[in-house]
Amino acid sequence: MKIDIVYCLGCFYVSGLLFIEVYGQIGAYFDLRYWRCVLKKEYDCPDDDIQYYLYTPHSGRRRLRIDIRNPLSLKLSGFNADKRNVFIIHGFNGTESKTPMTILRDAYLFRADHNIFTINWGDLTNFPCYLSSLSNTRLVAQCTAKLYAFVMANGGKAEKTTCVGHSLGAHICGMVSNHLTVKQHTIIGLDPARPLIDRYSNKHFRLTKDDAYHVQIIHTNAGFLGEVDQLGHVDFCVNGGTTQPGCKGNALRVSRCSHFQSACFFAKSLKYPTSIIGKPCTQSCPKKGRNWGLLPGKSIPMGLEAPYGAFGTYCVHTETKKGCPFE
Image 1 (cartoon, rainbow, N blue to C red):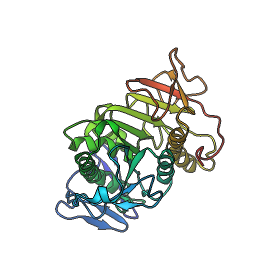
Image 2 (image 1 turned 180 degrees about the vertical axis):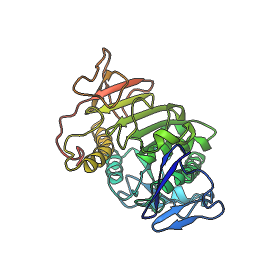
Image 3 (image 1 turned 90 degrees about the vertical axis):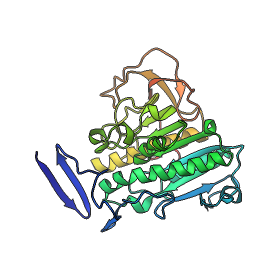
């Protein structure tokens, strides 16, 4: 069995038949910190490297830290049990205070009908530490599940709660269900991450349609940074699913831009609920060429207005030439 390992400023890249056990035995007893990377080996929540914040229509962009050890934390932060809830989880090399997460936050604030919870795990997912980030998703999912349970125990309703994750954050949304006794109601995966996930992760460590009663996927860089084909109950393949209008530069910049566009398109659908419409099409995503395999059937809106119970792949064509249609 051949294993090639290349060290890269504190990250490991493994090729061949065996992937270094991201979920295995490296640093079995202590957190491993090297360069800017952190590999968590202690699984206790809450964890100082993972922060929970709440934004409400009254607080605006002023974030309020939530402490799940304090039963009054939600009440004192302006939580309204009558509103819907959203948990927003960023991806690799992100934070809750950077785009595209701030674009999502602001779109929900515009709606003014949600308690907006953001999970910040930026200290556990610095560039170029992709493998340690993959391992750390387990702890982030566990701690997010603790927050979810805390909100439900203090008046939140599962049927009014959605988990929205971008890239690795999408898979974390799915992994949250590993720690819950009641299945989540809705998950929206924004271009779920593909690198290594597609080859080495089983269903317990990636987002699948089994993780919630309604799982929606928005594909914008399928086959490169994002996963391919149908993952959820309903998948939207946007502009062919691979390269988005307005994304310019070298191949990596175009992929990264297209990957982020999933959050931008979803944010637009939050502010303008029926502005992005999908037509039924064949299951493959990305699409090759101009033939998207459109099928007969009813078109549906992408985003929160997608009908509960919808199933299949829907193709979306947008007219925008901007880098982000929401800005």
